Length: 300
Length: 179
Image 1 (cartoon, rainbow over the protein chains, first blue to last red):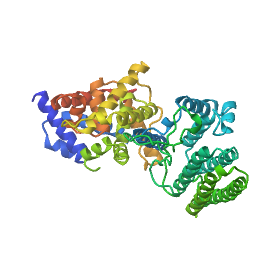
Image 2: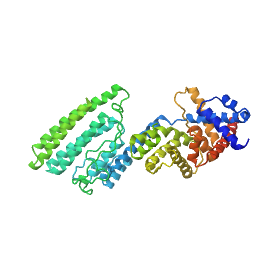
Image 3: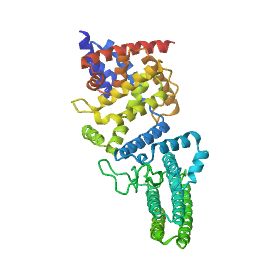
Image 4: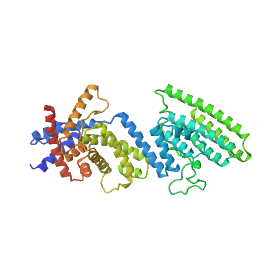
């Protein structure tokens, strides 16, 4: 028998042994003349198959799956024009470096308190987006989102006091976006990237006429980051149902308080702002009230 | 898994769910393949993840030309391993942490871990091509035809490598057991 014939017999036995689950004895009985030579080889093959019991560590697998899903979603978001693309590149890079490397510091603090007419405002938005992207739990994202909605209301009040109706309109859209994002997070619509409200136009689509020039950093539209949503009720930051429910109740209390305070703030400003800004501010009030109502309904 | 061709075509059209299915289907197998090739379960984690990120980036370039998708995927994994050795300029390191299938009791798990470590140690005595065949056949459970596609060799050549690989593995295992 030549080598090629023996290779074929060995392979036939391996198929029977490993795929068809025949026993070693059954395989050897089929080829009694080669049994002595086959036996040690088949035993070795069985030992080699033990290596198929290697499994990746569960925590690594979960992390890898999350990263992969995120990459998938980022890719999809990029396809319809990246959400980061709306920020000036310098602001995105700066925000990521500040958040990841420095963990905050003076510039972030200064940007955090900046208003939409400040040059640092785009850093503030990019920093917020970075934080949202780097926050992994649903509860964490929801809490952050609630704080960001709160910030938008403060910015609206600031701009309204300055009589800047155009920017009030823009920030109102961002407020709407954040509140809708909160609803999506709370409802946990599975495995999807949350669409931005002020989304970038999809590929091939002309930018809307209202899109401001990218250089005007104070008017750069904000887009929702790709956010991984787990199943409803999952990843709410608790080890058991009671803890998760507790977190939801806590979030609800915060939002009830936010809704009341923000309504009061906007109402108070409404009496003082110039007439030219009042319509924009009324729309902001309506968006705020409707938005918080939807969020609280989602939490029921 | 549903018809692989339609799944891959959907993934090429940015269908996230299709891509996720491919990922789940192949992740463990690619991980085992890489682990056996480099002999390091922890390093294999990063490489495995990189394989799928590379696949995500380049899936649009995959063309159906009669070759299975798995052959293309394993080719990416193979290239990743080649890059790993080239960059690190190192040989395989001892397996620090081999994990075995859940469900084993502690004693069985310990015995199996020992077996796996012996196999991985022995595999280092094989030639690159022999290790490739043994890894694809016995840890990734590919058929001879699939292995031939991945390696770009004839089925006869793969069978010959399989034979010589098992012989070399047996010899190495005997040495390990006697040490």
